[in-house]
Length: 526
Image (cartoon, rainbow, N blue to C red; front, top):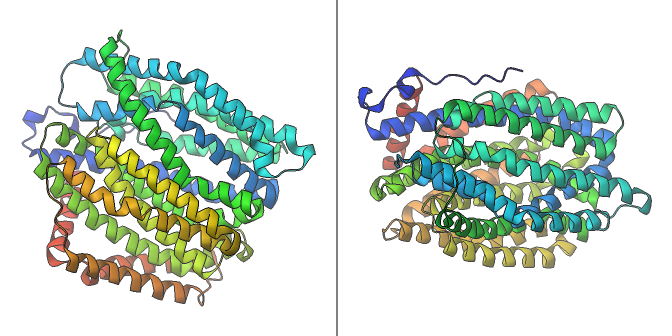
């Protein structure tokens, strides 16, 4: 695997005053390259996952694979105790891209490292608790306690190392240079897959798989440090002032609270299902939702690639441009979730039949509700990213806390009787608070009044619902018998949906904006 990143086009690296490009075109160029880099990395990760997951399921067994998923979510909860310094660093660097003071940016890097050290005792304590409780939460037999705890301990160590490895990556993304790591993360995903398969083939079970993650994280940190040193001239550490540390610490605390709430919302599903039902049902839920989760990850990566450029606009207080770009993001999100969600509903049963076996398909209603959760998550994250870019996190975190409490409460009530269906309904209902509040909150941050267009919203919503219901109905009756047929059907369905969905669900103005934006992206890449 080569560690050399692809070079950016010359018109990106040349001085901006020589380019003859409008600011919006420069923003689109970098956003396009960031999106390409993110998608390349993510598709590599998904390809590796498609290959590795059946091997994991076969090697660990249905029950232990569910335990592996539960352990991953449990350790993920530790992000609520790490202070989130790397995320605060990314937001700060992105918001202050126009600032030319390199020394102040190096002080922010040092402040992020200081915040991580400050929270380290809390992290270690939380890790000990996770390790001790992991066998009980995973519902494993007493003879498996030692191996499960050792696996959890390795995952905790991996989590601690991943925080340090994320520091240089945060700087790269915050400076809107995420495309500079193009190909590197994809290669690391392949290496991670090889290590995981090797651990399974050696018969080392959960412990070996966790050890493979630790090796991969160490390699990732070393290579990203090299890339950032090469492409960000100011990158380094300078002695921070108390004001620097206090500023980043305040942002980190709200970020930490937001992260805890996000984990409670997005990772509690597996924990609740594992405790109330069984690890085997967790496996069915995770595999049925694999495609929807993958799509959510792709869209999240695209949003993350675009956000640094928008954060720069917000930092310069160019709110009208930010609002206009946000409207385009809403239209793009709607198109993506409608076309991809319909395709998942049509062919997810066939995909599981060919991939791991139809016995892991959770059924019509679970499949439909999982896709609706994907849609809701996409729109919530879209607005959340922009609210975070304003560095005004308090109100968003408070609303998220209420949504988390409602989601968990409804899920606990409905899961015992309705299982996966009840879990999904609980998530959807509880998170309506965010769905409704975030658009108003974002417009307030941008100094604009929320302009609701009931007719346009009703049209888009109705078209999406009709597409989903029709696709879910047909998906129960269609079954591809080979990978060739499945891939052809998925590609054809996605292409048709992408072409016809905007005609039915978007206004003429929105369609024109999308067409113009896609032409600009293609021009900037060419």
